[in-house]
Image (cartoon, rainbow, N blue to C red; front, side, top):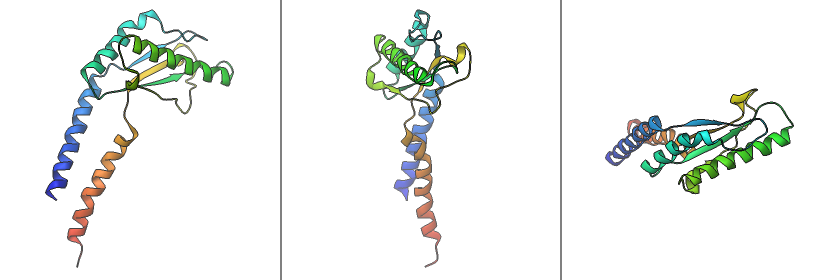
Length: 153
């Protein structure tokens, strides 16, 4: 029971530390011209801020998700979104980010409406799927011994 308590405290400390890192993360949305996949030179400061964050947080990774506007053919838009994500990945690598710290994640729906804001690649802090399941698993394992201890014999 004591070991389980210590594991719970360790998990809580990790969650709180991750939350502090996430608050400092310079997430960004890089916008693209219609039909283009070129990363604008004006995004250099944003890309450097992401690289600096990753340099200061050894375990962190970034996630790239590309979106398109609602104009054009679906197959062309799908290819364009992929090209944009690869272009941002390459731009991050050019400023010193290791490729294994970049996760490309295709959104379920790549169409993000109309206009300039729809044509973008979002750079967010990557949260592994297992991290989302950890709180539920920890709560279940903590509840099991307590329930067993109070069960009639």
